[in-house]
Amino acid sequence: MRSVAALVSSLLLMSTVAACGSDSDDEPKNVSAKAAALGTLKPGVIKVAVQPYAPYTSVQGDKIVGLDGDILNYAAGKLGLKVEPQVTDFAGMLAGVQSRRVDITIGGVAWSADRQKQGLFTDPPYYSPPAMAVRDGKTYKTVDDLKGLDLGTVEGYVWVKSIQAVPKAKLHAYPDANGVFDDLGAGRVDVGFLDPLIIIAAQKERPELKIETQYMTPPTAAEVKAKPAYAYFQPYQTGFYLPKKATKLEKALSEQIDAMYQNGELEKLVKKYGGDPEQFLKPAADVATARRGVDRPQDWTPPSIAK
Image 1: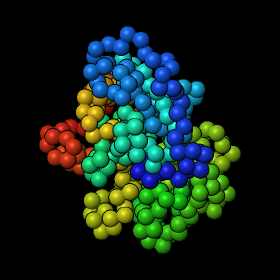
Image 2: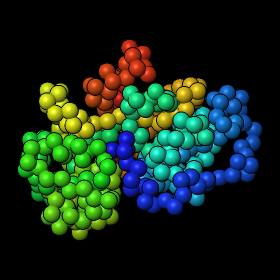
Image 3: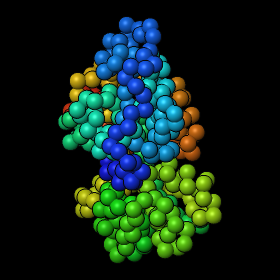
Image 4: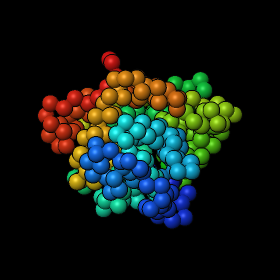
């Protein structure tokens, strides 16, 4: 879950921020009045902080690729903005937004009431479902199915807390996702908890592991009340994260995101990376209640594909 997923990416980086574009080179020409009015740090350009987290975000040359990258590139194109990435780690992404050194950060950033106090969130470009990596032939559906099992995740991820709350389950925490997959394939772990597209990508890249992706039936409100750590077994809403003063840009991007739910673009992109639109593009009931009266009006309806 990307609310705490700095660890893996920080191991890949040697510096906090490495710019992937010059402030003076490749200035966009003939910036439209509409694009200039969005108030980006450089007219006609949207500066984006990202960390390497394929297949959600990666930088190839001067372009962001991956699910989040494709969504932003599409929306920015509609708004007449050139996307300019800067590579950092997860903490640097948030800090860059909160200090307004960049216009936005993307990459499965989880919405939270605390985080929105220091920045703005767009409408969710997708909802991240609770995914499990399991060995072929095994089926687990609910938290009760996990009791007494060996459960793996990456050190520092919020699923650590959830796993620790499962009766008689044994936690296996690893420095990175590869450790989870290695032990899952070897039979030392029964279930691995990771972001869903990471599991889907591993299925394709490491077929010898013989693993598959399963989606958990989220725990009920009563179960979460009894064991609050179970909340991390529920879907979470992602968002593109912007500085507090970037109200025009946030509104414009949210409008583009909402339109992508309706015109089929988001379904196409989720499928491109192996995701299930039914899991990624339909909100749980608590998505609306979490944000209404916080950073959305009381009548706000989260975007969704047709139900």
